[in-house]
Amino acid sequence: MWNDTDIPLAVFFTFRCYGTWLHGDERGSVDRNNNVYGSPRISANSNWQKHNNELLLHPPVKLDAAHRKSVEKAIRDLCDKRNWMILAMNIRTNHVHVVIAIGSKRPKDVLIALKANSTRQLREDKLWLHEHSPWADKGSKRNLWNERSVGEACHYVNNEQGDKLPDFDWW
Image (cartoon, rainbow, N blue to C red):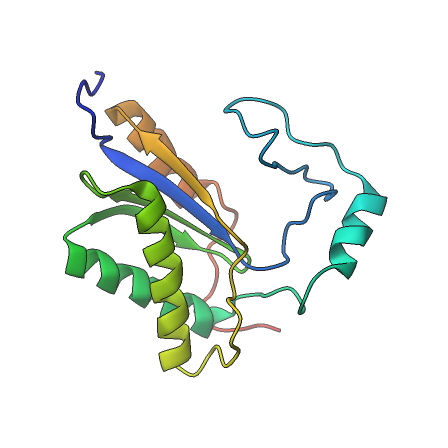
């Protein structure tokens, strides 16, 4: 069934921790010129990755168990406050996936709010003491226009991110 309104049923947001997936990485990458849905990623290039690694302003950011709990709280609080419905959420050590029904809000503004509120909560919890953001610039915002796409995005977030991460740190 297709949603024939101008408002998507939900939006699939992804944002990465700073420095954790650079251009040239073996997983491939996307840039502003190679960002059409379904198009191939930019191929791995160790020299380009090394160059990008040298440009980092601070070490890559990884989220431990306490960081992940803090980010989850921030996202839940924001969605409760704005009356947005979280359909799926998975906070990993190097990125965040969340599927949210946001109504007519602009996805760009919601992504900014997700990252800002997550950073604020990390600071309140004394888990991020730096002035710079823990997040890479921008992020992904995919409109989900029908129930099938919502279901597939939720399945991906809930079941295809690898093993469940423990509520404690092992490193």
